[in-house]
Length: 333
Image (tube, rainbow, N blue to C red; front, side, top):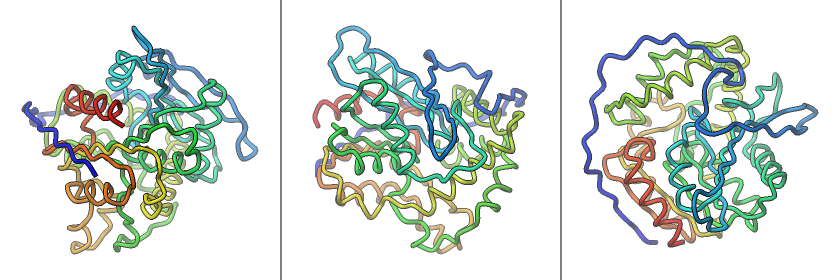
């Protein structure tokens, strides 16, 4: 199992006084500007007419004939891949960045049985519609769990797998995090605020360091959560949290047969439900400096790239450093 360490050289800004939050967006993020043209895939699922928002960005310059699918995290959107889309497109890749059902610019059904299998099927349908029969699948955070499930379900269509600080490198429930019901998740999600988002991301994603450009993503998430569709947004978010907590992929890492790249900010401490856990359990959760190495040993054809000192979103903290490592890793697989 190869290991590459990418060292963080640039200093990051300490959080300062945050600007007041005012913007609100529609239930499908209407009003928030995406970095590339937004398209929509209409399809039927579970007896409902749904649509997925997505960006399809052509290779810039000399195309290499390869496609990449970017899977966003729970508190992220396709738009938050902005820098990675540009880096991959500039390198010759066609890039597809969908918003999964329940997220961002996509449908928020009033009833939906969420599973990683269902989201993977939805994504596969989108790729078939676009004529993409083989792709590199890259997932960040919760998107890492989805990318794993997609690769397990569609191994012949998955040329490579890459995961950026994926959650699900441990089974929180098995480790002692107490379970809460969908109703409890819903009550929590109804109380989402810009201040709470900023505080959580500062401490969990960015290791206590803040950059002004992160405010755009706080605005996006808070504006969606507090907009005119806030109850439907909160309900779908609650269902999705339940999916994440109850559907581990950890036990199936051993079945991944494609070349797999793990890109890990070692200072990350993300773990679903960690705030609910007893102190002795909480202290052991989300240790990515250990989790990355453990996952790389479980996955048969894994290459681990570590970013010491970076947190949950290295592609946003140190984009130049991250994208250099990503492109080198994809070319080496």
